[in-house]
Image (cartoon, rainbow, N blue to C red):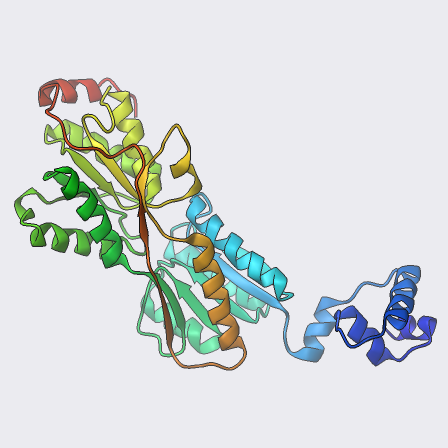
Length: 344
């Protein structure tokens, strides 16, 4: 910057203002500085700037699963707002594994990020509390007893209520839930499904099939349902990837959706709206979640230390995978026989 200042005939402080795109610089002097910088091939040194300002202007984001579009859509919301504020993102993936998450967080901290956003982490609550003591932290999709962290969560109870109200309103009584295993939000969806079925007088029809927040998890859970001969009239999948696996497994044995089985997902990721899928699902506004998380983190970077919470309201998007139940058109035995012909 001293070389640029000498070349342009201005002070080093003025060069700093121009390079930080501050508004209080006259147009002629700004142009002179920029021309000098181009002539000298100067680029601002982010590392040197961070040493001087004690900020890196970088935010670390650890996401649960790179293969799940839900997280990519949240990151898009974070990035939009971050770029507006002059921040860069450093991304790391936890691979749906707590040990990988801890390693990813350590790596991000080594880059001296100004703050961290953890998207649906699976690591132990104690680990999250420890991170919050070290750096400004916001967690999405999960709430723990961390006094120094911020949280952005969806009203899970409301989301499940929307699903059950919709399916019961269509006339379904045998509604099975395929859960998300150890994923963030899965336990709340299980609990609220069980509570909701009981409140509607359907406790005897409630059934939970173990799953995982992946299409493979949905496929295998649906296989188990078919082989049991106890196929419900409706399936509530804990996320849209599970629902995609359910749709694939049902299609492989020739079961029609929604004529024979209705399917409802959760998240409303981009593929849910494709004409070939057209999935009824709960919308978690991903861009809003991302932008809310970054705003909350910026408050903490600026000195806020008390625990804070933002709760996002979900909505139901009704498409073509849900309809009133109809009588079964085949015997359970034939369904079981059909699924055994499918190569997993």
